[in-house]
Length: 118
Image (cartoon, rainbow, N blue to C red; front, side, top):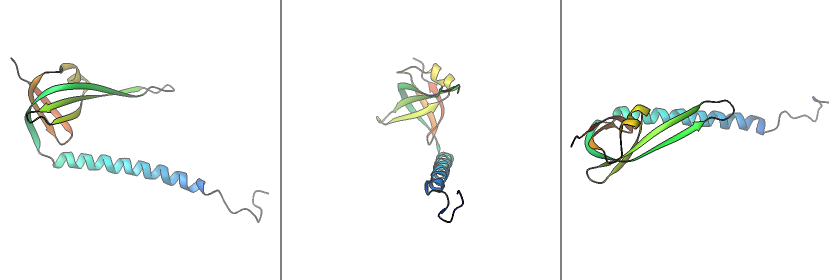
């Protein structure tokens, strides 16, 4: 009965779902590559800045998967412009709100922060 003359093949969604999954994967890869290329093309910039905020984002942790934590710091530049950059956990732990110094970054890539003493 499975291969009767009335059988026209698998349902339409059988083909659409894999196409959607592949499209999402390709889009994610292309966006990541575009960001990486844009950062590489950007100049390395060092500017006076102040740490004005810190936050974390956790993901995972369900059904025996490990938890991943991302760390972000918001800096305020001299002219009042704010920029939020992802940083490593050890950098996150060293910086405190209201720290002033020189921020070095390239596009959206954090390069370092030299605290101004005094």
